Length: 453
Image (cartoon, rainbow, N blue to C red; front, side, top):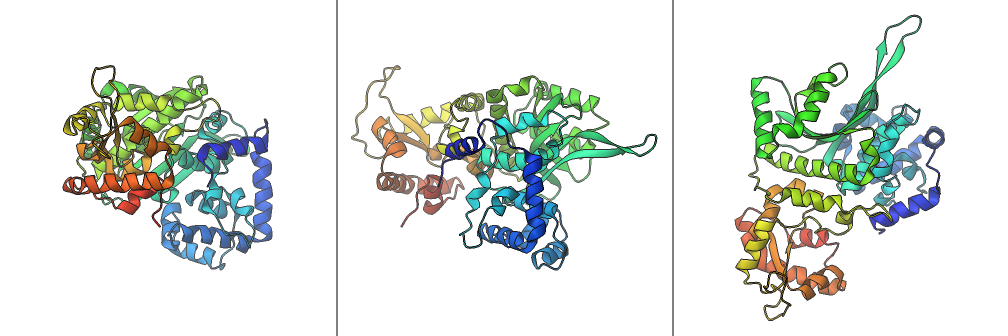
């Protein structure tokens, strides 16, 4: 399987220096769907089954009545290009990737990676070109899924350029009321609210918001109190949201109440600042991290305080490389570190001895103590953040390794790495379970791209 950065290199080489003409691309795709809609639908069903989803899942993810989904899949209803695009998006794909599949090909869901990098694509929303709707509704949502390395089917994705009819002389004209790209977490046990993260762009394209929201089923005094409680739990102070509050007051005519009154964490960028790719991509990643913590808080999970959270965000801000603009933390699962306090506890608990072999030697570090590396056994990546939250920062998840074993775990042979993970899992399994941190060996090996035979 291609690594994420290789995919983007291939995309850039294929398209040369010129950006894709999305209008032409999508028009050609619509024509193909019109010619043979059942074939395209068949490929989408293959992707659906490969991801373990069914018709009811597709209905939920796209806001479609089950009867409609059932008729579409059985070919009992006219198939429109937009339906195929939306279905592909919910499965983490863009429709052109599905169109390129030949009938005798084994469908590989990783063809969905054929989109531009988030950092390149987002600035294209900051104009009023005809391509904006295509980018906002289909391309950017899949690019976000790729950026974060998460599974699209864990979310209900909504994306649109909101247009409202404005009365005037003659024919009514369309009024642009902004762009909303939202990801709502599925499978929540708390049915009183909807937990979302996403991107909002103002109608004048001058302001861009990255945010996480808890939208209650009904706004009242209790929902306002809960909002403040969630902010407190995530250590978000008033000054952190002041830019969003200003925007919400100024944007009453276009920003719906559900977003004005439900923001928990946010970053607001001006049109000029969004040109700093490195900064805004790191900011979006930090918002997603807050969203993961928020999901756990809403579900009632006790979140451990992440004392070095800012250090984590600082580490993310430096991982965008100038050569291929790919995230190291998608390729290397332990870029998010164990926080400093837990790191010191791990070193003390293990007496600065390697957990693979306590006879392993090391050198003296700058602090005049034996130098050792501390890593999280269960990698701290978006996929695990959304599932385990603050448990990732427990002492039980910290591993003490000598420099040689640390390097071997990163760069050794597959067999060596697998043996090391198995050994560390056996040592930590019981204490992890004591902390209600239940992960199987096969799940852990999968996080390290290792498969037991």
